[in-house]
Length: 443
Ligand code: PMP
Image 1 (cartoon, rainbow, N blue to C red):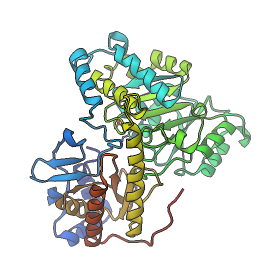
Image 2: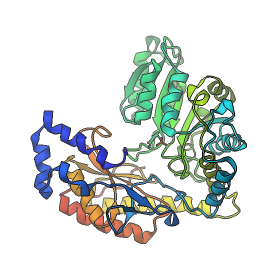
Image 3: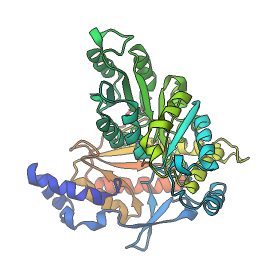
Image 4: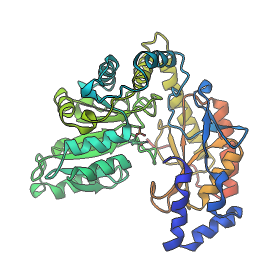
C-alpha cells in the first residue's frame, strides 16, 4: 500500500487545509477533476501474472495488461522461475505455509538454518539471522543494538523502518545530510568528547545507519568514505541493502562488491528478500557474536512466528541461481540484464530531458515531477497507455519534491523499455514536466 497511490490521495487533500488551495486547484486545472474523484489515476486492486515474472499486471477493473514499472522485482524472480518455483511448491507441501511457531519454540526448520547459512555466505559475513518481514528487521533490531546512552546517526533520507527503529531504541538520534560524508564527520565531531577522533565517548556506542541504494533517490551510498569516517571515530556501520543486495555488484553481492568495500568494515549488514529475491522477509548479517546475541535477545526472533518455509526456500533457490549453483548461467545473465536495462533506461530518460535522480547501475529511477498536483495526472495518463508507474509524494518525499519512481527489472525486454520510454515521453509533455539539458552520467 505504501507504493500504491491510494495511500497518498488523502495526504494531498490534507494539503488544502493548511497549505494552499492552489495545489488542489492545479490538479483540477491539469485534467479537470479534483484528486478525490480521480480513482482511475491509482492502481486499484491488481492481478499479477506469474507466467511472465510479474512483468505485467492488470487492474481488476480494466481489461488490458500494464507493463509493470513499479514492483521491486529487480532480478525477475517474482514467481514462476523454472528453478525456484518447483522448489518453493515442494517446501510448501513438506513444511506448510507457516510454522505457526516462533523460532525458539519449534519454528526453526532445516530450511531456516540452511537459509541463514546461505545468506551469511552470500553477503560474506560469518553469520546471519532472518526475520519474516524486512520492515520489522530494521524496526526491531535497532532497539536491541542500542538504547539509552547510545547514539544513532542516521542519513536524513533513511527508510521509515529505520526511523521507527531508531525512535523505538531510546538512543539519542542525530541526522546527517543525505549521503554527505563531510556532514557525517561534522556531526560526529560535535557529538564526541572534545571533537577528537578515535573515541566514541561520551556515548556508550555510536551506530551510523545508511542505505546501499536509497529507495526514493536511486542513489548509491558513498560507502567507502562513510566507512573510513566511522573507523576514525569508532562508530559502527549499519548498512540497509534492501534495494542493493542481489541487484548490483559483479556477483549480485550488493554495494560492498560494487564499490570495493570490505564487508569486514561493515559491522551490521541488513537487507530484505522482497526485492531481488522475489520473496519475503529480512536479514541481519554480522559477526558470530553479534548474531548469537540477537538470537538470545531480539523479541522479533523470540516471540514472532518464523519466516514462511516456501518464502525461505524461494530465497535459497534464487541465491543459488544468482551464484550459478543451479548449473546454468541464468544468474549471471540476470545480473548483466538488470545493469544493462537500468543504464539504458536512465540514459534515455536523461537524453529526453527528464530530471532523473540516482546513479548508474541503480535500478531505482525517480523522475522528478516536483509539484504533487502532477501526480494523479502522470499516473493516470501512463496507466491509460498501459504503463504502471508508482508515484510518490509527501510524506515519503519532501513536500514539493514529488516524483514518479521507476523500478527496472531484469525481466523487462528492450522492447518493453522502448515502449515505456515512448509513453513517458508523451505523458511528460501532456503533464508539463520540467525538462533539463542532459548531463553526463554521474559516477
Ligand atoms: N528498508 C528499505 C530501504 C526499504 O526500502 C524497505 C521497503 N521497501 C524496507 C526496508 C522494508 O522492507 P520490506 O518491504 O521487505 O518489509
